Length: 335
Image 1 (cartoon, rainbow, N blue to C red):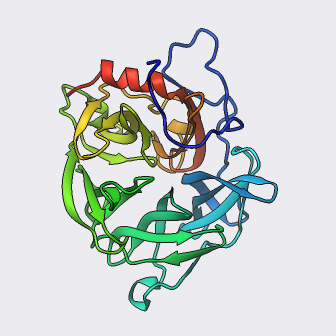
Image 2: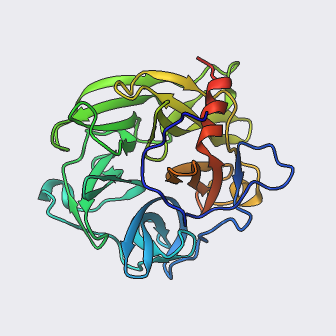
């Protein structure tokens, strides 16, 4: 794919490890996984399903927001910073929301954040507790103070993921309508907003696959990291769930969305990219989970590093090359 164009910044110093010798995997795990342990904070029970972006702050080159369930087993979000994207200094205090309407600003719970840079602001979306799960939205310029906006949708909704630029002059978001429990269903939808407050023009993106076609994604699916813009379309990593004899199994794969009409899927992987295999993915508070929430990519080399939650307990990294992932998605498409 010599003519492939990948949008975004050059990140020559992004976290990276080459494919192991002899491996034929399209994506491979970091040999030092997990990169963030469950006890990264003095009060943490687990640290996982977290979001990362390039961000320069003193000695730090990246910033992120992290799902940190505490030892009361309350779901909290904390900000953090690393030099290299691997060794994180996560703040002990919860991330600080300001400016929200009193009706929605009282914290109930929050989890599974994503971060998208749009212009000079960094927008955080997360599953926000307000009479059930919905999509919270806030923006920051320094990862110290987060300005809360209105919730994007009414309950119940999860996996709100913003696109990194406006589409047709509108902010754009993927989400997964759900229920108030361990949702046994779930399709991905697309929505637009003129102002990051009022969301509409909802469009269906894709449904779970048929069991006999691609079983790892046959029960429910949800968007993962912020989509990556390429000349082949938006590259979307997404999770899928299989209801097995041993409970739910979360894996992730890839899809390509039309650049101008992202609710139109042009390719979708049948095989998964990453599925629970290692001990830290198969054993933890929720066994058999690999859940992607963030990706760093270097537009110059096509390298990508995906941050993913492991067994709802710790955080791992997986690597790949965007051209190879796109080719894999197209060659193994179930459309």
